[in-house]
Length: 254
Image (tube, rainbow, N blue to C red; front, side, top):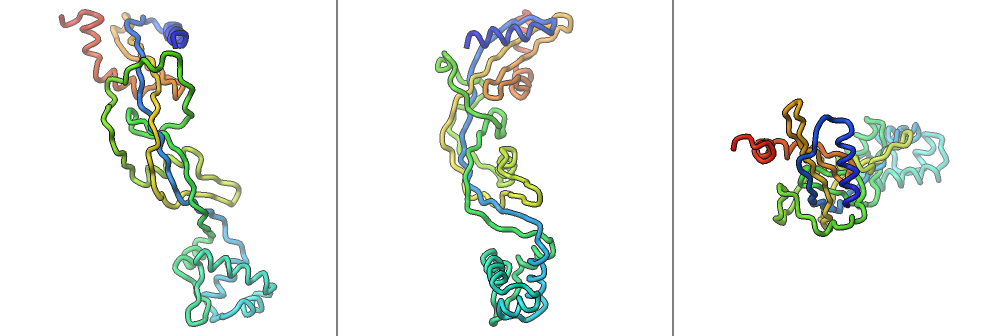
């Protein structure tokens, strides 16, 4: 951890006319949230499927044999397609006649066939300090990490997080849970549940710099999870502590 701090400090001083007046390290909490969701497979509806649905919509057909004769398609193939349409709730039998459901009418009009897949789950990483989900992987602990204090603006209270469904869908999208492969698209149709599993502590390195030519004090924060300078945390420190820094490091106002 000491070597990383030295490297970061050296990097900061290479390209700016400033000096480091203070440096410290602390951690922010990163919550692992298991999200269970239902994916849907979407694909452009083929000609035969459209013809079958249109036939069920316009003609009073009662069997696969009738449809196969009308469309000049082998009956066994037609029976398989009918079973798919029934399983995906695009057609139903009313008074012994194959009829389109509302779902079937919509998909026919859209020209897109949708099939629900088995529920899946994915772990997402939520940072209260950023008020958002972050992308990345938890890193192995740094030497001395266990001695670091919690970030002074991070809450130690146990909170039950709640998110709107679209927020979780967006986070799953950002994690690559929705895929496109040619005409085939897999999307998240519904969030089933979300459960907090555990919390990791992410070390961050804080540097306060002073640029005398601009008479400016400002913070730089290296986030070891993101492996980059963290503008969100820097902005929070700049907004809340810049006046304090002037009093502390420049003896202004005393």
